[in-house]
Image (cartoon, rainbow, N blue to C red; front, side, top):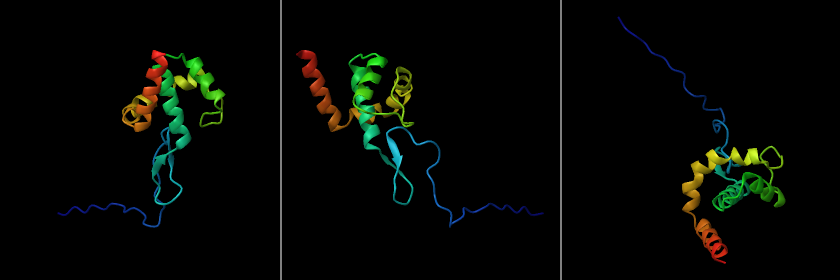
Length: 117
């Protein structure tokens, strides 16, 4: 008795793709092979939401500030308290990376000066 097992090999000619939904703050790189890279605008939005959240800003004030600065959601809509709230899981995910950046350290110093002043 013998058992023969066959499996399909990936199509070598098929274009590789990035699976699933692209997380906020990232984008698919324009050059092959497909990979994720930072989206500068969305990265700034994440930093700003984090900064305003730490200042104990209500979601409505955070949404107002994002809209005042001309930022829009991925769907091109104005920010609302609900859309800001929906970003919290992503902020929790990227928070450690944000806090480790030099840019965050500089922002933190500015926040400390504003708090002391």
